[in-house]
Length: 135
Image (cartoon, rainbow, N blue to C red):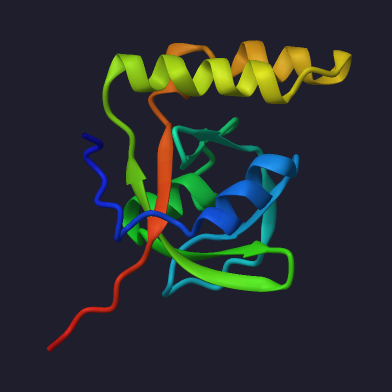
C-alpha cells in the first residue's frame, strides 16, 4: 500500500496531463512572491515527482522546503499542491527510471544523467493535493 493516501493524490486526469507534457509549471510557496516556472516532472505509480537541478537558495525547491504549499498549472487549471520529500531508495530509483524513459532526446540525456547524482537524488519531492485545514 502506498504511504500517500489516495485522498491526497492528484486527480487522475491531472496526473495523465503531467505525464504527457514535458514541462510542469509550478509556483513554490503559499506566502512568497514566486512566479510560475517550468520544471521537469515525472509520474511513478500514479504519483507526481520532481527533482531540482540547481538547489538555489530562494529557488523553487528550497522554497517548498520552508513553505510546502504551492500551485501547479496543468492546462487551464491551477491546483494547490503540497510538496513532500520522497524517501526510500526504491522510490528514488523508480523516479530515475521515469526521467530516463520520459526525457529521451539527445539534448536531455546530460540532464537525465545529472539528475542521478546523490546531491540531486536528495531533492526528490512529490506533489500531492493540498488539504485545507479546519479550525
